[in-house]
Image (cartoon, rainbow, N blue to C red; front, top):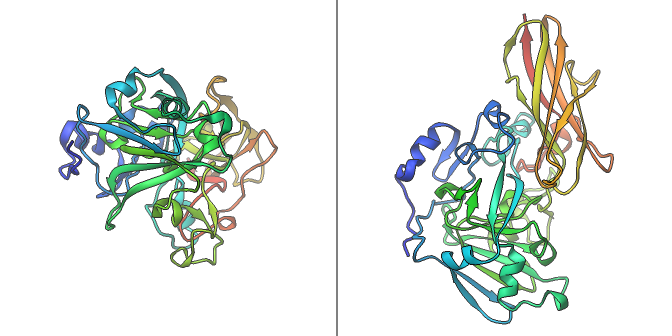
Length: 373
């Protein structure tokens, strides 16, 4: 098997797809789509789906590929891609989102580390593959007698930039056994693109994208979370005064389920608009709960109007689209959006309220300034 990185970024049309996106880095390759294109389709085309990489993009030979399954299971497995595709298949429509989505709003408060994501580090697709629970069952895992504190650790083929280790993460057993959690080999009915994890990735709906690793090499059932630095030391939600370089594995909140969030995709920041009715459109998302309401303001939150919602009832782990027409008189306007979930919870008003040095979980009202002439 070849898992050497493709440094050319040109194989299989990758360079052309990169040209469609807003690129934050080429090595590692990190990019997001323009927001109007993100809002154009309820399911995001693979070429328009955000890319989050922590290192190289490994080039993997599908014919030689094997997924190793081990740990606290009845028998170890070494599965080919063909064998994985021959297992019972499921398709789940789910939104994946980077924990750093909308980090740019926190950077406006004070410096933060990480790529300056706008609101495009998110996307929704149909993911196809066997349920992780079925793969574990094939390895003889007895879910009826499973300990509640077990975890499933993922090890991957990509090497983290500037480090001597490969990417890894884990999820609690309860989420691993949930019917929505897949090992996906297809996205929107097509094989995964290289930048999205070909030939196999985990898809853990409702959780931060970091828990849906790409380019899977192995999965291991164990009695503790992964000790990979990505799991043990990174992706922790910390108080604003805490230096993330000086914390241990027990510090902070491990980012798993994503919080309530929303964003304005149209009009764009800085747009010049004619006076009168203006179509304002965007998305709202909440990790494992329903988006119940979306409010939109044309005057920076002094007054609000309720937006119309669009979603698929059979896709509880997918985003909600919203839209509204606002009557905007001439002048400068700050548009704002806030969502409410089924528990009656809403978003903080300002990015100052949740600012942290890593810029994670930026969920304040999304604001867009426009000029109406």
